[in-house]
Image (cartoon, rainbow, N blue to C red; front, side, top):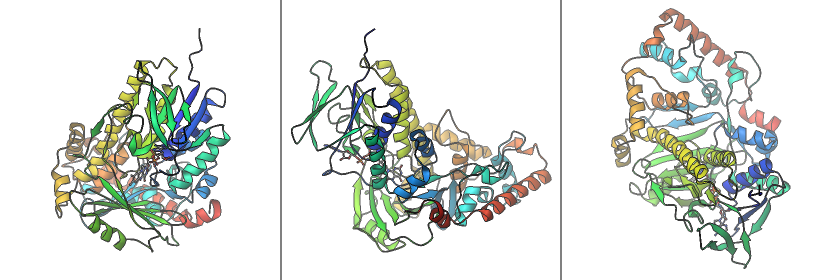
Length: 500
Ligand code: FAD
């Protein structure tokens, strides 16, 4: 049999997507399988935002064999236990979307069901009391999970905030050490085969030409190859996720580094607050049909914790995704593949997922269309599932105080989401479908937090008597409170383990 394997891979773009892809491919394929080249343009630069993650990034770091303390130190990062949502369901109301689970399931029935039963009768406090993440976040505490049996301390689930620019540099070092060759320069032309339209080479301003068997388009919003050359097309989700701009600005930090991202609903969108060791990242994500850049500027600057460290800058986008993520011999990863807005920090996860699925469908030079079709189908489904979870935050609100929130509250939503909402409104049940990214805890946290009220509770929550349920929930609440008390302050944990 002839050796038809991919011999050369060109990664176009050196942002988070490009360097994550380069690191992972070099780790998994090793030095000898294929030559890996990454092309990036210093003049064009990177989008430079993208600082909050979800716990799945730990899988990526472990796969690379990265030392976590070193990674946090080098990216001036901090730890994240979830997201605090302010003013979303109603002005003046705050809730927490924690990583990890609430309480423990009992007699095969979800904790959510028991809590719902008690809460509806006024016999249980708010759900956050049963989450170690939410409780620790409230107290500004953090530690990694320890082996402590059934204790909530064994169940701490976390992700990171980090400086996106430093993260790309960190991974660049890793990938270059593993044999990836970096080529700096601006691509000015994409050369396609006359016969089949496959990408043959990219040509740079300096006249150099880089050929490859497989191209990975990590060129950011441009989609230089996937759209510019291969014209994949774009599925526009603006009607569901109307934000189309973000204004971002870093500001001086505080001594206390909060172990969570904050998302505050604003008149025409929402504002993020992401604490790092050396600064706080801030940005207002908004829809320009409902407000002006000037109004956003004023709101953003009026709501910073410290002095701004740069002039605010605007990033424009259209929510949605490429019709095909993989066309011929080109796979788009990162912003080149689409963008759904940063509300639940899912973009870096989508990069990770794209890389993992590319590796599990890794082509040879015949580029089997069945593999490509499968890749496109799976990523499309994954993206749609995340989209629905994001829409929920906008749709499930009591807010009617601005035209933006009126639009969101009354907009049409995808059928699958409408069904999930109908199920919750009836019995308080939440479920994870297939292998969707967000599990039942996440759906429950956001539905409950956005003040959706079920008509009744799950009937199986009557398996335990009311008294027994109250007693067990009390025990869980006490264990969570004691565990949070035991944990060190987040800032002390960083100081002792991974200070920059
Ligand atoms: P980019 O960073 O734009 O990199 C593109 C690369 O392509 C650059 O190196 C550039 O030089 C190169 N390039 C482009 N054109 C050419 C050319 N002609 N020649 C040579 N090189 C070229 N994600 C999260 O997970 N969490 C978050 O909290 C989060 N917040 C976000 C907030 C906002 C406002 C936005 C817009 C995004 C956010 N994201 C977030 C998404 C995250 O920023 C991106 O997924 C991530 O940075 C990956 O970007 P990228 O590498 O695809 O693109």
